[in-house]
Amino acid sequence: MAGKLSFKEKVGYGFGDFASSMFWKIFSVYLLFFYTDVFGIPAAVVGTMFLVTRIWDTGLDPIIGIISDRTTTKWGKFRPYILFVAVPFGIVGILTFTTPSLDLSGKIIYAYITYTLMMMVYSGINVPYASLMGVMTSNIKERTTLSTYRFVFAFAGSILVLATAEPLVAALSKTNSSTPDTQHGWQFAMIIYAIIAVVLFYFTFSWTRERISPPKEQKTSLKDDLKNLAQNKPWFILLGAGVSTLIFNSLRDGSTIYYFKYYFQNQEAFQIPFTTVAINYSTLYLVLGQGANIVGVVLAKTISDRVGKKNTFLYAMVIASVLSIIFFFFREDNLLLIFIFQFFISICAGIIFPLLWSMYADIADYSEWKTGRRATGLIFSSSSMSQKLGWTLGGALTGWLLAIYGFKANVIQSEDAQTGIRLMMSIIPAAGALLSALFIGFYKLSDSFMITVSDELSQRRLEEENGIDNSSKDEYMI
Image 1 (cartoon, rainbow, N blue to C red):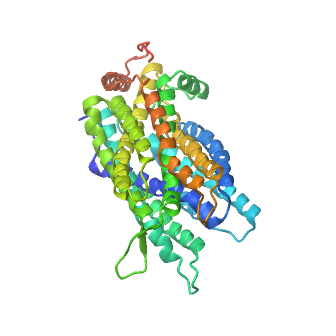
Image 2 (cartoon, rainbow, N blue to C red):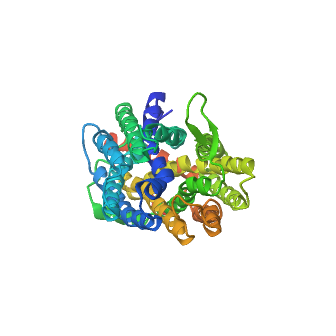
Image 3 (spheres, rainbow, N blue to C red):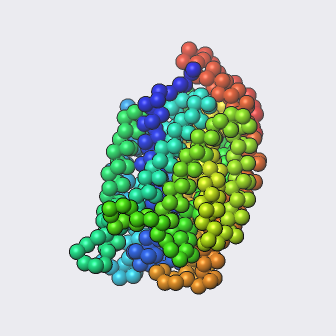
C-alpha cells in the first residue's frame, strides 16, 4: 500500500506524544492544585495567569508553524525541533514545579515567568511534532492509523503520570521531620518525568522520517500562506471544534482533584501493601479515565471507517455531553456510578483526538489541492493552538469559578463551593462538548472526497517528478 509505514516508525511517532502527554496531563490535572495548595497562590490569580500567559503562547503557535515550514535541514523541516528542544522542555518543566523561597509577589512573578517559558518550549516541540504526521505519509487511512498509535501512546503517558504522581510525590516528600515536604516532592517527581520525556523524544527523532515536501515550484510567501489559510473554511471549523473539546476536557481534568479532596469525606481508596503509601480515589478515577481514553482511541478508526470521521466526532461529543449532565446528580455514596460514567465519558473523549489530528492532515492536503501551496506547519499549528486556547479558557475558567464559588485552599469548603466544584465536573464542561458538536456539524470534508483529493495530489507529485506541467487545478472550495 502506498504510504505504508512500518510498525517501528509508528511506535517512534507515538513515543513523542507519550512524552508530551506526561507533561500535558500533569499541567491539566495537577498544576492548578499545585499552585493553590502547594506553591501557595490564590486560585483567582492562577486563573488570570493561565489566561494572560496562554493567550500570548497561543499566538506563538502559528509563528512556530510558519518558521518550521521554512526550515530546511538534512533531517527535514520538523524533526530538528524535536531533537534540539527536548532538553529545554525537560528543564523548564522541572522549574515550573519548583517552589522558590519568595514572598507572595515573588512567587507570582516566578510562576508567570516559568509557566510562560514552559508553554513556549511546549509549542517549540509540539507544533513541529504534530506537523510531522502530515509529511510522513499521504495515505489518509494510514494517517488515521498513525494518529491512533499516537494517542494510544499519549494516553499511556497520561496513565503513567496519573497512576504514579500522587504516590510518587508522597514518597519523595518524606523527610526526617514529621511534616512531609510536598514542595520538594513535586520537584523531584518532575525530574524523573523530565528524564523519561527527553529520552522518548530522541527515539521519535531517530525512528521517524519526512517523505512529503512542498511542490518544487512553490516560493516562500507568508502573505500567500496566510491568505490561503484565511479562505480555508474547514480549518476554522476544526479550530472551533478543537477549542471547545479542550474546554470540555480541561474543566473536567482541572476539577477532579478538588472534587475528591473537598467533596468526598474519605479520599483514600486503599493502601499499597507493605508500604505507607495510600492510593486515593482521585488517582483511580483519573487512571480509569485514561484507560477508557485508550479504548476510545482504538475504537475511533473502526467506527470512523463505517460512519465517517465527522459523524463519529459528532456522536461522541453529544453522548459525552448528555452523560456529563447526568453526572451532576451523583452524590458521594454513588461512587460506582461516578466511576462507570467516568469510563463512558472518557471513551467518548478518547474517540475525538485521533480524528482531530487526522482531519488536520486532511486539511493540509485539501489546502495544497486547492491552492497548489503546502503549509503543513502553519495548518498543524492550529492543532496546538486549539489545544492551548481550549486549555487556556478551561484552565482560566476553573480558577475563576473556584474563586467565584468561594473556594479556600486546605479548609473545609462551603456548600456553595462544593456545588460549584460539582458543576465544574459536569454541566459546565457539557456545554463545551455540545459546542464542539455544533462546530463539527458544519465540517464538509468527507472521507470519500478526501480520497479523491489524495489521489489527485499523488498524481500531481508524480507528474512533477517526471517534469510534467500540472499547474492547472480544479477550482473548488468547500
